[in-house]
Image 1: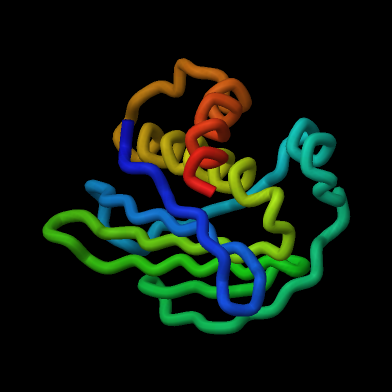
Image 2 (image 1 turned 180 degrees about the vertical axis):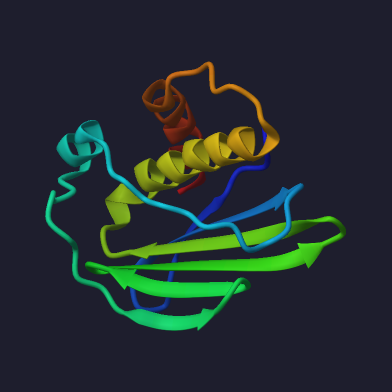
Length: 139
C-alpha cells in the first residue's frame, strides 16, 4: 500500500487532508471530474454545478480552488521524468475527515493505476471503507 495521507486540525478548526504521491508522468494532463450517481447519493453531490472560486493557478504546477465550503489544492513538481503531487483538501466537518481521506486515497490509487496502464480490479467503495478505519485511528 502507498503511504497514507494525513488528517489534521487546522488553527481555524477545519480539517486538512494531505497526500504526497509520485507519478511516472510529467505535470500537464487534462482532467475531467464527473461525479457518478453513487457519489451523488452517498455524499449529497448536487447534479447542478457547485459554486466555487479560483484561489491560485499556475498551470501545470498549481491549482487551488474552493468547491462549496471545501478548499482543494493540487501542487505538481517535476521529479525526474515524472512528478510529485501534493494534494490538500480542507473541509469544515471534523467528523468527516477519515471518510474523505479514505475516499481521496482510493481515488489516488485509481489515478495511479490509470496513469500506469493497470486495470482497476477492486471496488472503490470497499477499498475506501477499508482505508477509513486506518484514518479513524490516525484522528
